[in-house]
Image 1 (cartoon, rainbow, N blue to C red):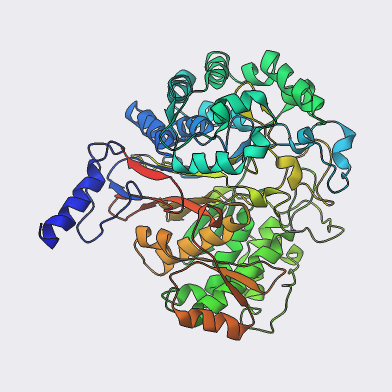
Image 2 (image 1 turned 180 degrees about the horizontal axis):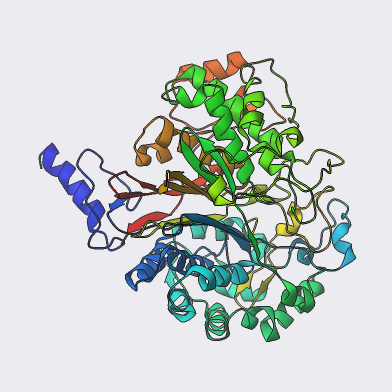
Length: 587
């Protein structure tokens, strides 16, 4: 076989897979991919998600005439079945939606939250946390149903049908799910029901095995038939509360019944002529918007490349540390005053950009965003009615510590990006916290571990937990240009910023940008993790700057970006991070 024929066969094999719709545009020979579904083009709808069966559920909704929200909700419920180690009915998340017709953005917060018990305000001594105490009241079901009810056009039964089918009839276990079951063996062993599903015969399910979840199918069917009440009241809620409390937790049936989804305004900033819409507190969108703006103000976004540009990568490391240090400003905005608008302002970015390339310190000192919080909305944002300034100033008693392995740092999370044929877009991130959440298993799903994300500044009754999740939508004028988000706890914001810069500032092909090597820093250390693929001079520049580079193999923990890029001619390019099992599928 000639090189040309082999090249063409690779491209044709890529697009002929059953994961893609018939109208998906073939990849040109100039852009082959050795991995199925990682870069896909379509002139209609596009779904990029962390598991193929879930992405297909979203495409099924589009084929039924649904919009981007219908597709996202169908994908979200399906992910609760097939990406069960990372997300599920017992978790929660956040969703940013852009309505192309009204030219308005919406944001829905449905992350787990604490209940009414005053004990939620008390810290537990290290090493004494009971299994049930890690779980907060789940918001996944309420959030997905609220989004579908407000903005979808299909019925609840239609968007939930694929998830019910996958739970009832089963699906093929992916390599990633098999690995996470194996690594979580001790946690899963605490519940005999979980063992019977995920470790039959005492051994973790292997890639290619079929996982059938009849208990989860029954729970999903109840929700499809009766709505959120089937989950938040009645037998499911009773069993959930009883099991959590038997394991030392605090969730009650009253907490379940009282769970409230928050309809909020997205953060909004102007960057290189684009309008960037991000997730407000207690999610982590402010850091993404700040990183992008500081990258622009410091010249990093104009560097043209990262992979072979030592100076740019060394300065990029400073940019990331600045965004991570300023993430100290967090907490439930209904309970804690958070200057998120100040953090995302251009004036604050200009001030913080002066730090890039300056005196190096082991710990990056956080800036004071309060002086910038009342800034007027930037160009392109006023008509969005963006997230408002804090109503009063309340300075935290101490700097919040970065989320770590004791909180969401061991998390892998799940992200989806959707654009429909009309240009509506959804960016949504969901999670159960660390792998399999708290390990509390009831009615076919795992409860989250979000209670571990509270700290001394933010803990208390009746409030949402903190998270680094950052579902983001970037517009050019009134048109969606990039829908992006990431899974991976503290890796989320730096990964989104690096991929967005590569695509929109450097002009790299989206498939190249998402597969390209990334770096990861922390605000409190000189260490910088570096994925393979950079030139050796990049390592030298990092050392010269004062960093201690650590080689890190690209893997599940480094962050998984799923995105949809919309070209100016309307073609959608769906991209799925090769670090995980996800795929993009065109309608």
